[in-house]
Length: 493
Image 1: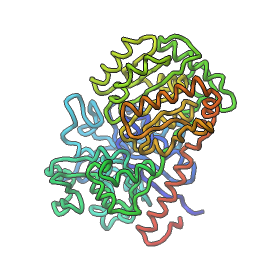
Image 2 (image 1 turned 90 degrees about the vertical axis):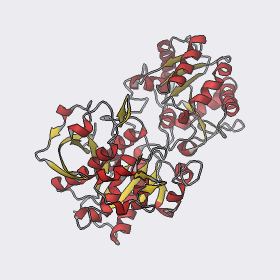
Image 3 (image 1 turned 30 degrees about the horizontal axis):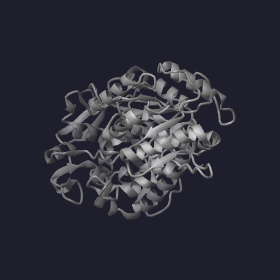
Image 4 (image 1 turned 90 degrees about the horizontal axis):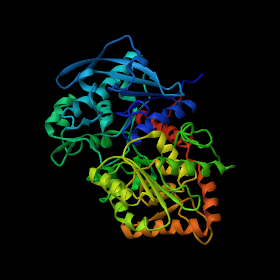
């Protein structure tokens, strides 16, 4: 029997063990579906404080990890992604990872992040050797793992790992791993690699740049974002570097984990429903209104926002139109935390109009599910959005997205046509208060005057094929292409 393609994912986040955003969701779901498709996919993740250490089996060896100042020693534990046989290996090093945050704490980013994530990358390779696992593909995620393709091409010269194809996925170009040049010493790489064709970028060490230039293939999490990061507006200074890779840059749209996000089985909901029977969605709406202490009214549209409260998410633009929006016969439920000024803006609006708005300034996964199910419309006015996950959850739950047409939002939301009733949501461009308010008004008008269109769009949205099976198949094709490019011949098992 031919052996399966072997893939080693290296990441700083993996849900449900460690997550700050979409990166964790992707790494926590994609390998499960890859294994269902016959790929031997495994994940390497730091063992952070807050992970249930005792639930992960301690592996019977010590890892010797080459670092800039000499070898560092660590251990490893093994667990599984929930509902799957996909292995997750946790690198144990108390000094680097047993801290009160993933990337930093209340005082800011940790000053030794280059060393910490060098240990992740080089430790992942040491672990693979200890396990006797020779990956055909090393799949690195974001700047924290971007040194992995660099190490495959340099420090792994002459080892079995040197033959592995490397994939670097950029989940958000806004975070590049930029540090003072002196931090290069932590990596164990020589100064000959500090140049504008490798790791130097405008006088600083840039880890993501190194990964982009060294990886066999570079991916982003949506086709539109793959094009956008090659422009000055969205490339965050690396647009020319990405353009230099030409056709090696590919956009593969994220999926959603249907085992977690399914209104027909969701344990968080007051009532369950499906594309064939939407009656439970009305019960979810009333339950959400009760939880938000809003009047229980079936006849008004409920808008929802679930997000990190940052300017990138366009929440400043939304806040600027709240006085006008809340003068209409609508309700708004917001969930999220972040910028204190934006938290105050939402809290103030909810305080002045408690009959029309509720703001939950926290993270609450159960409530997020309830909001997705209970709302009629979901608002995402992001300035940029590499893929976006909440619009995919909203589509799955029959909650029509209202989005700024950028990145993955443009790829996944089919704009409403009031003449034909076609579409799966509402979109606008450019981002600004007037355009956002006009689109919110269009959605409100449709709710009151074209209910048959809204109901048809709900079902159309729920039927969209945004499961991980599609993405897993696309990644397998990319892996095979990258393997052939790296080895000079196709994968034959």
